[in-house]
Length: 318
Image (cartoon, rainbow, N blue to C red):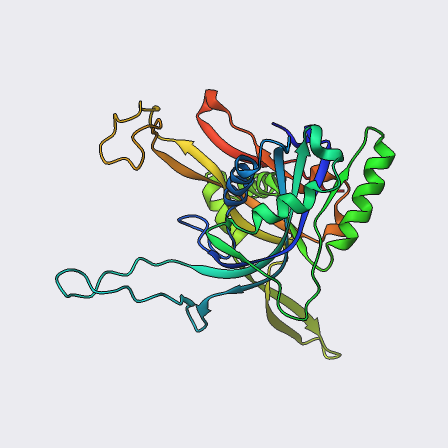
C-alpha cells in the first residue's frame, strides 16, 4: 500500500534502542535495514488491541544518535560475546553479530477510525516500549533527560493544511537525519560510467558510488621565467550528499515452494522461497529539507510478476 493512503502521522519520538542489529545485509553494515523497521511496523499493528482501529501502511526513520559496538583500528571489528562451552567441553563457535545503540524517531503512516482519539498515541507508545526494534530492546530515557511524548497528527484533506502540519512536525525532529531512497542517483551514476566504460555493470556502479574514491588533481603553474611546475593534490571525490549503500528487499531465485516441501526450513507452515538481497543507494537528509510525508515514509512495493519483494520511498529531490 502506498504511503499516499496515510490519513495521519503517528510519531514515536526519540526511542532509545539497545543492541540493534548493525549488519543489514551480506554486503552492508552500520545501520539496520529498513525491512527491520517495516517488520516492526507490522508486528506493532498486530500487537494493538482490537479496540484501537489503526492500520499502518508506511514508516519513516530519523536517526538522532548512534553508537556502533566496534573496536576501532585499521580494520574495525565488532565486540562479540563469548558463548558457553558445548556439551563436549570445547569452546563454541562464535557467530559474528554486529550490534549498535540507537536513538531514533519513528514516523508511522496511519489510517483507521481511531486516528481522532487523543489517547491513541500513548497507547501505541506503551505497546512499542515492550517490543524489539531491529533486534534491539527499547529502553527508558536516561535520568535527567527530556521525556518526549508521542503524538498523532491528522493530515486532513487540504494540501496546504498537510504541508503546514508536516512543517511543524519536521522542526521537532532536529537535530537528526532521515533515510531516503535515491534510486535516481544510482541510475544517473551508472549512465555516466557507461559513457566512459560501456561494459560496466550496475553492481560496479553501485560499488563505485558507495565507496570513497581518491582522485589525483594536477595543477600546472608557470613562473616569470616561463618554467612550468606541476602540483599534485589527492582529493576524495565529492558526492551529491551523504550517500550510503543499503538493502531494499529481496529477489526470488526459485519458485515459491509449498509449506513443508523444503527440508529443514525454519517454518513448516509457511511457503518457502530462496532469495537474494536487492541493493540500492540511500541518502541521509536533514528533516527540514523534506517537503512532504511522501519524502520520508517507506512502504512495501512488491512486484510479484517479477518475483521482487522490495521496499520503496517516494523521495523527490527539490
